[in-house]
Image (tube, rainbow, N blue to C red):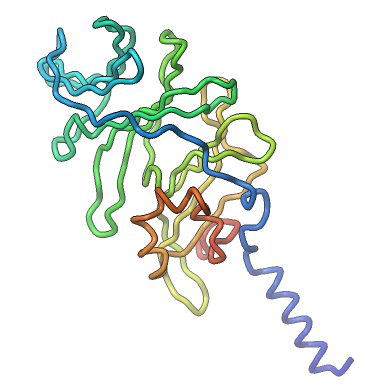
Amino acid sequence: MPARLAAAVLAWALAALLTPAHAAGPEAADRLCPQTAPAPAPLAKAVAGCAAAWCTAIGDEQVCNCQRGERWFTQRRRGGQLVQQWSTEVSPMMGAQALQVAQADVDGDGKPEWLVSQFESQSNGLGVTYHRLCVLWADDSKRAPLCREVSEWQQLTVLVREEGQKGCSLMDSSWQGGSEKGRGSGTYAVGRVQRLEGRRWQPAKERAAVSRRLLDDFMNERETLPQSNAQRLWYQHPGARVGTPPGR
């Protein structure tokens, strides 16, 4: 093999080793976790013990944001009786009505859990949204809600069904900075899989992070991600890569 050709082949091989792989591993088989349509938008309602309350119905139960003094609580009520409540944060900008409830079988036991998300804030600039997401067990009101702060809920942070897993996993995602040779600094969506184990979300150690640089097509896609994720998850795009952003 001529020296020049040999050098070119070696350079190509090294570049292949150093270039992050396309998202074509286990992440390629992920699908959006099936969910019910959200419950009706919350409405203001008179609730005993609450200075103000906004409620929505789930079957014969209600989920309400209840104000007591200067504090807010999310309540689960049945037949007018309080069966469960936990402290929450209500943004003055978004209001107590920025509450959404849907259902999905998160733990894979064949029974749907409740997904209670409270819209907390939105940043300037990129307009990143922040929610508090709580999983409730519909048939066990004594089990404490599993809550965590998430960014870009239903856009970048989504519940997914992994191949070989009974329940649904959380692709916990956020925007991060990075830099690529020849492209300079940029912003990247970065997601890591969390699985429900016992009563906690735990990182899936065998699943690498996925990332995708924010380019014009991705920026235009952001508003439709809640719908387009059902056909192809944002990290299954050809521009996505396995691993964290370069330069981090």
